[in-house]
Length: 171
Image 1: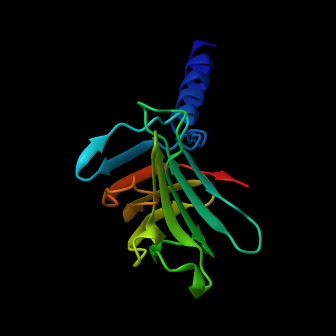
Image 2: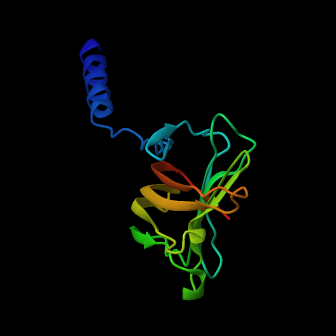
Image 3: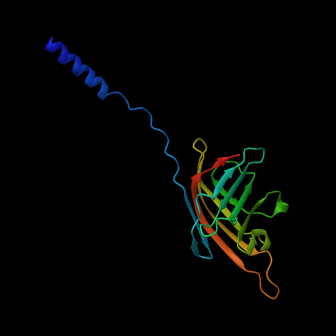
């Protein structure tokens, strides 16, 4: 009797040892949003910042980075239309090209646009996308110009650079 119990226990223990572990749940993407304004770091509010991809005919990637010190302001918004949900480099273009690829920045009384500079100079580099987990990672660089300067003052130029790694919402 003891021998049968011992063999049964040994057999059961061995089968449990070789049973594969159940598949683990996918780990949620760690949100990392970095922004510099003219080379100076700006803290980003991860609760109010958004990354969205529309699922309509013309997919649009929308990146909205809200400043932590000013969550009621719009902050930096980048739009890339005709976004094929693949990695690659997406350069800003004039609206006349048929694409809406531009950036805007609003903080306090400052309003600046990429297409107000004449060249609409900017690029978004999408480095990785996981369409199943809805995560995206990349970098951006945009030159923006103040939309309205006070009379007698020169319009200011802003260089906004940074990176993003986050889950994105699908609309």
